[in-house]
Image (cartoon, rainbow, N blue to C red; front, side, top):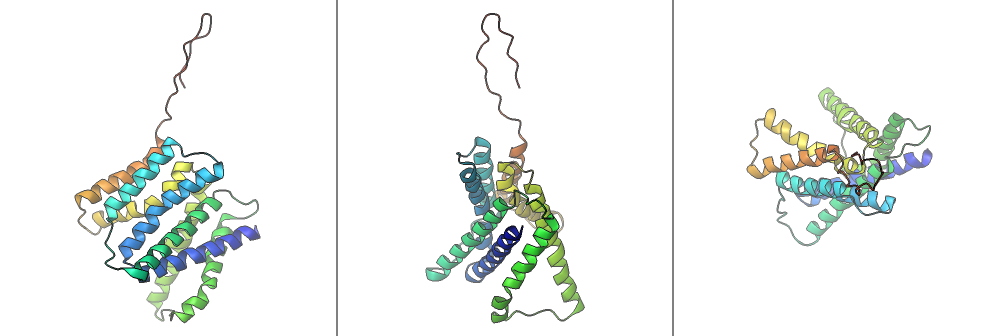
Length: 242
């Protein structure tokens, strides 16, 4: 139990710190595409390594649709940078993706006696505490207004703690393909909200990307492929399909 909380603490701290460092080095769009787009690949590879088998056709299709759809939706922004900033930013974005992917794989299996709320709450809280020294050096400031504090509490409880609690809860019963592409709900939902509520324009490739993201998430619900059975011999009962 303690080991799981400690591991989640380290992974939360690594994920958050690496991702925000990448945002300081490369454009937000590029960092986001690298981080979210790499999660299905890393998680899919991790699932296969842990199971000691190759990827299934369903997992391969889901991950392929996910990566192509995300690139079409978000584009692949040109960094306009070179040298150490580009290399460092890409490395931090991939490191953040790796930390999140490991956290996804680790939390697929619950720990007996560890309440999911405690698991998420302790990991997020201790991970935040671990980042306090770095935040103090970087000039972290706490909002002094009631509105700022309220927004801070809301961001910590709803789109962070509640989101992680729901995500980890779903991992317990999710299939391999669903685990790999589960994070795609974030860019897909953001795209739909921007169109419906913010009246933002989506390009043709963006629409195609949203469709592919939806197909990637729905691919796990397709009926299994039927396997052909050899013809029944004399006196054998007729074969039935499953």
